[in-house]
Image (cartoon, rainbow, N blue to C red; front, side, top):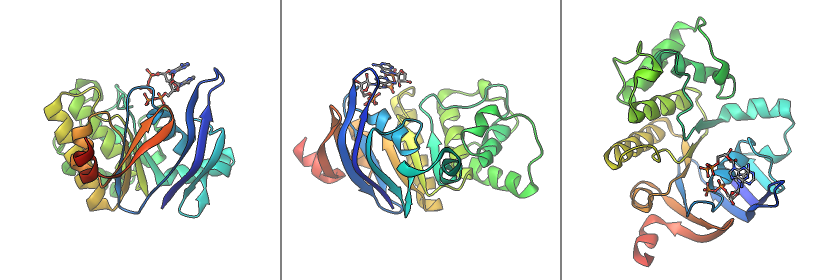
Amino acid sequence: MLKIDGLKKTYSTGDEALKGVSFEVDSSEIVAIIGPSGAGKSTLIRCVNRLEEPTEGTIFLDDVEVTSLSKKELRNARRDIGMVFQEFGLVDRLTVMENVLSGRLGYMSSLNAFRRNYPEEDIRRAREILSTVDMAGYEDDRADELSGGQRQRVGIARAVIQNPKILLVDEPTSALDPETSRKVMELLIDIAQEEDISVLINIHEVHLATRFADKIFGLRDGEVVFEGLAAELDESA
Ligand code: ADP
Ligand code: ADP
């Protein structure tokens, strides 16, 4: 479903963040990328939705070559790519409901979201997803009144309402305590399975990766140094 082949990214500073990375994510699969800070995990995620322009290599989402799309074509392709940001990416002055609904516009436009009228159907769907991520009853709270774990769950809800084929998740737990991290991961996996969405997730806690992912890629200095099932990593660790 997602096929990455020979992906390289060299920043203008000369930093070779990715040195030829190849792997696949199958449909409905949860794939974790682990590795030390500076390994290239964020760069990889940002290349998949072209927030960062790859230097070389190809990325296919089903039969769409993401790497060769024009800016205009990219806007459509991004409907299929949900993004959950590290810093949650919520608009503080909007309510939980408004933040989730803004996901209907796609994550780039949602950054400029303001009050508008959404169809009743979208509102019903938003309530349903908020309930799945355990945030029912918070619809009218402002985003800046929430805890870190709550914000992360609203961020997930906003990505899911977009109805993507794949969710890209950049370090979902880096700002959270271990207990909240585990809960957020459980919710993320539940909702991905329920909605039949693939997940590509950057995570630095190996124990969370082995527990929740189907497949794990170890990245170091811009190269894949490990690739396998979560159980195999457990044995080799
Ligand atoms: P990780 O997410 O694994 O911590 P990153 O993808 O953030 O790794 O970074 C990989 C390498 O690329 C690092 O050496 C980092 O300094 C460099 N890097 C990341 N972003 C940029 C950028 N915008 N400009 C230049 N170098 C960058
Ligand atoms: P992360 O590693 O979690 O992605 P960082 O704190 O390393 O985040 O980077 C924050 C921002 O700075 C990002 O937008 C990243 O692209 C940029 N950045 C990271 N490393 C470099 C670098 N060596 N030179 C220039 N920009 C960088």
